[in-house]
Length: 264
Image (cartoon, rainbow, N blue to C red; front, side, top):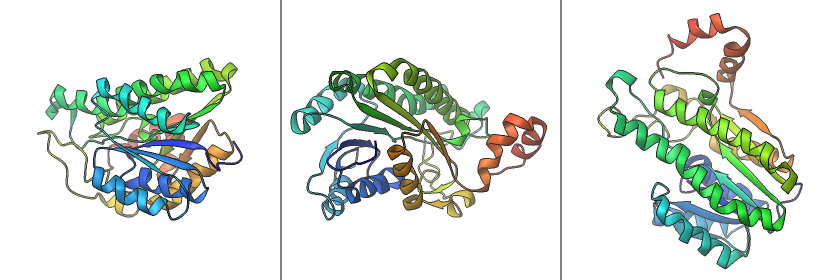
């Protein structure tokens, strides 16, 4: 997908972080962003910024975990735009608690948003892409979808699940000219650690040191756009933390030595 002009791009979690910066990046490419998140006010602010660079932008506030409402959202999008060229499954929630202290309800909350809502939305949009015999599914996973990490049991599990589902889906959709890109960011400077779920269900409320020193979300978004244009199947984004992926694969003894000493 070399050019993005006038492409209909649905982005979940578009009110902040990587999703917000992706909205701006697509707008600069003259695509038509369709923004999904819970916070209507923030979405409208993002829309106003997008309209400085592109002629159209649409907002669909919703809670993605209310899967029974997503059919109406998809119908509304297609009714207005006529199609969906790119779906960016970006919305997600992290975790800051040990498994032994984490109630199963928290695991379910994280899996519902990070995995099941993405699967549901994808399955609702896929028939339209099959009908038009084109489309691009982009999923924002994480490097902890490649290895385990302390205080991230549910989060890491959700990202492993995402990796498995979309890698399998990629093979299934090849004959329909539908591409799948799995993006695995490392430490990106967003509020994901602040909004992470703790053992009692409250938000962590703290930006981890790793997040503070992470890659700027705008730079991350630019790399994702480049990957989409090149139809890349997978992309790791980050700095030195990406080495953990390679350590886990090729030097597991070193990975286990390092990972137990990482605090955030």
